[in-house]
Length: 416
Ligand code: ASP
Ligand code: MG
Image 1: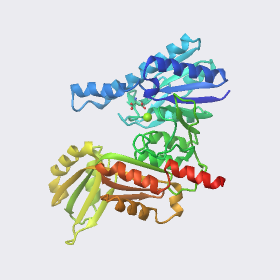
Image 2: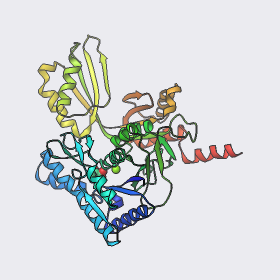
Image 3: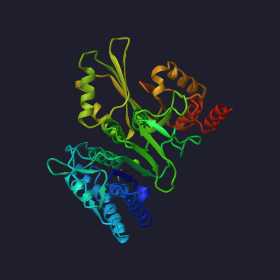
Image 4: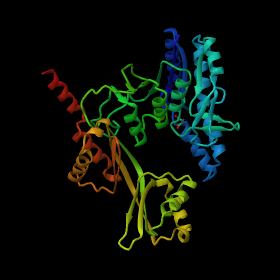
C-alpha cells in the first residue's frame, strides 16, 4: 500500500463545508487503497488574525510566545477534519507537529526541520487510520514549540513525504497549479504542466507565493514528486520534478515579482579588508535579511555600499547604522523605498547569452528605471520602482513568449 501525503492551504479549509469536502477527498483516496497523511493550514486568514491579536498587545511580541500562539490555528483545523472524517465513518487521528515527530532547530518563527521521527505516524497508518498533521509547526530538542515561517505548511507536507518515502506529495490550493506568473496580476499568465525543482526554487525565492521555498528545497533534496493542484476543481495541476519536459523551447519559463523593497546606501566607508564584514555582521546579528549588495569604489578611495532589505526592516536598519556611525566610519547613509524586484527565471538561460540584455531593452522601452540588478545561473532580477512593477512584468512576460496567446500560436504552428 503506497503512502501519499497531501496538503490543504488556508482557503481550502476556510469553512466547515470546505472541511467536510476535504474529509470526503481523504476518504476517496483511502478507498482507492492508499495510506493517507494530510497536512492542513489554519482556516482562512486565521493566522493573520492571531498576529493582529498579538499586535494589539505589544509591538515586539516574544518570539516563543508568538509561535505558541500561531500554532493554535492549525490545531483547530486538524481536529475539525478528524471530526468530519469520523462523521463519514473513517477512522482518523490528529497530530500536532511534536506528536508527529517533527523536530526543528530552536529558532522561533523560521525554524528548519532537522529530523522527523516517524514511529507514531507509522503506527497510526498501519492501524488503517487517516492521519491529520498540523502544518507549519514542530518542536525543538529543548521541547519548545516552533514554527517554520509563514506559508510553512507546504514544508511540513514535503518533509513528511520525504520521511515516509511517500509516492507523491500533492499541494492543494486555491489556484490550479504553477503559472508563468501570478495570474491575479499578470493577465496573460498561463499554467505550466511541469517545472523543474531549480526553476521552482528560484521562482519561490524571488516572490512567487504559490509554494514555500523550503518545501521546494526539500522536494529537490529528497526527490519528492510534488504536484500543485486545485482543491476546488478536478483539473490537472503542475508537476514539480527534476527534469521538466520542455513543453516549449523557451529560455524564460517564469516571472516573479516582489514589492516592499528598500535600497539603503552607505557612503564613503573606509577601504579596509573588514569594512563589508563589519557592516553586514551588524545587520545579520539583528536578523535583518539582505538581498542584493553592490559595492563601488569612490574617486577618493572610499567605498559606497548599497543593499536591499524588506521595507519593514528599514527603521531597525537605519537605527543600527546610525548607532554605529563611529565604528563603521561612513560619511552618509540614505535610502530609497517603494521599490520592487522583477525577476525572470529559466534553466535555458545557462546556455543562452543576452537574456539580461533583452530584459534591460524591454525595461528601457517601457521607460522603467533600473535601480539595481542581480543574476544567478538561471535568473535575472531588476529592482524597479514599485509603481512600475506590474507594467514591467507584463511587458517582460509577453516579450519572452510566456503569454497565453503566444503559446496557442506556437501550438498551431506545430500542428500546421
Ligand atoms: N498558517 C500559516 C500561515 O498562514 C502556515 C501556512 O498556512 O502554511 O502562514
Ligand atoms: Mg501557501
